[in-house]
Length: 208
Image (cartoon, rainbow, N blue to C red; front, side, top):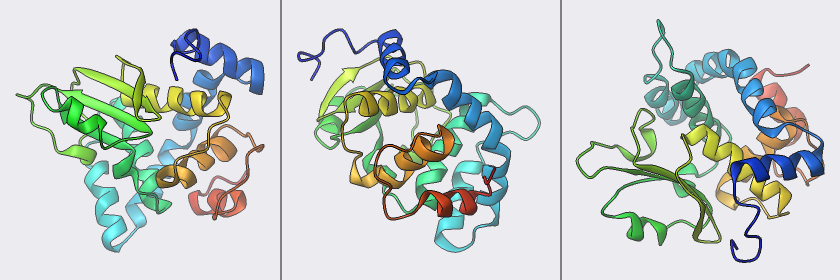
């Protein structure tokens, strides 16, 4: 893929191309939406019961109430939304050590790969406070961008690449990526999946 569009795979170019196609500031709008909706997201996550509620709370516990880290907050929200929308984010968010990177790449077609030092403890999907060696974006089974500064930035860029290249959303994260597209960014060109935009807005309490 990189060979086909070698000039596209830089942060600056992804944002420029997205702006050209969608007339939106992807980076600014993406993080502004997270900041705007995060309090309601967290309150909603806390109300859920059963297995879903347990999974949501495992991630929420990483947020410090007194001095919340913005990157951790954004990471928690981005990892909790798929749980609530019944996506299989374990196929999209992967964490591995620097000695098992090649093996991890064999298990991911589209997603974000967080690589940590072999000496660093990591708990897979539920870890949001890791200090990664690198964070990479995977498309079509290969690394297209690497050394992204953090997971939220990687998700933002991956969404942008998927949109500008007119790629289908991976089935494992289809509901979440459609939610980002239609609710958080206000873009409605792609076909809405099983959950309608209205039901997503209502479920998160985001009606305008």
